[in-house]
Length: 518
Image (cartoon, rainbow, N blue to C red; front, side):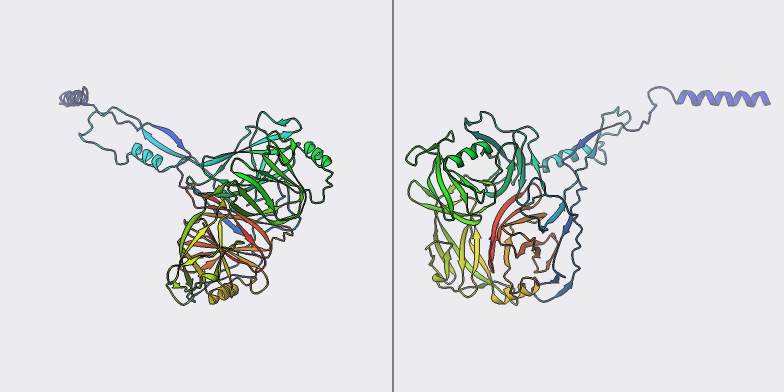
């Protein structure tokens, strides 16, 4: 009986073994993956905002009177040494933005494997390949403009571009860009046709420190002349100039400008040919060099070969060469309407102003009234980096800067008084207000006020679409306010995300209220 039972069990085992052999076997293996790093695809970028405020507090109140309390922004920024140069020893007011840390994201791509026994029309739950392709389509290549330097000395221009130099942008004196020996610096900018006003300063061994303002656009290359310190000394000695300010202006006339006029004081104006050799005024000169000029903000004018004049404000810094390469834009007709913004009203009110109440900056140009609040203006030629500016109103005039505009919105007197109270340190003490109207969402804002006597006494505030004002950027920010007791030129970097970076310049004088349209 026992032998029979053992034989039966042995027979069952043989049958089972033969059932698990042959083509019916399905081997279940773990999936094999290969990794692919996508630096441009990243969900983990973190922006850290740190804003230093001198005021004791900021009221977070919307324009309809709803109070919201906010705490003072804590001063978390550590004092850093000025990189490469300084405008003074006083503490600077800064907006510090932690740069986003790029963390490569690992995407997984499924390898093809044997699909023995796989059902027909099988699709994986997650299609990694289409996921990666979709991410790649959303990623835009970074847009830039390029800066190169070419040294001029007693032998003329160098055959090759200068290498091993540093660039400090004027919107942040603690930021340093370097060519790393490549002789070219690429600066990020929005990929559109708008002009940005980019100001920076460059330095290298043996040359005089040079600052410049560029009318920059995407995919543009600037070849900037810089003068060796020894050659400048020879020019000053030849013209018997004893430096007092050490500031000079080099104007590159190009092919469309006949001459320039600087309205500030200077020791002498000389003329240089394409090889940087001094020649007589009647010769074939390419550059005009103003020697030992007055410091601060001054007006400079450019006349084309038709006798039309463009103008801009420049800021002169001690012991620096200022390079100017004006790019002139044609005159054009501008049609616009004027509205007033009030605290109580939710809609803008039409302003019925006399045409005499609207003036073009520093020109005897007034618009023609064509309707209740509609006007037409023939705007003159201008330098691309310097906006059109209109002075609107008589009792409390407001300056409005624009490249192209159809609607001008002026704050009412009640609205200005509200802002004075809100900004505390602005109330009737001579500070200027620079209001920047944004056309895109704001991700990051950097700015620095270049002044003859910098104290760092300026603050940044951000207004949301509902009128809420705070010291922090939000997803609803549509206006930036700069409140400053330093008078000079404000240079900014405005980052709207996705590679949309613009650079803007504005101005501050005592009691000025200026609205800048991006």
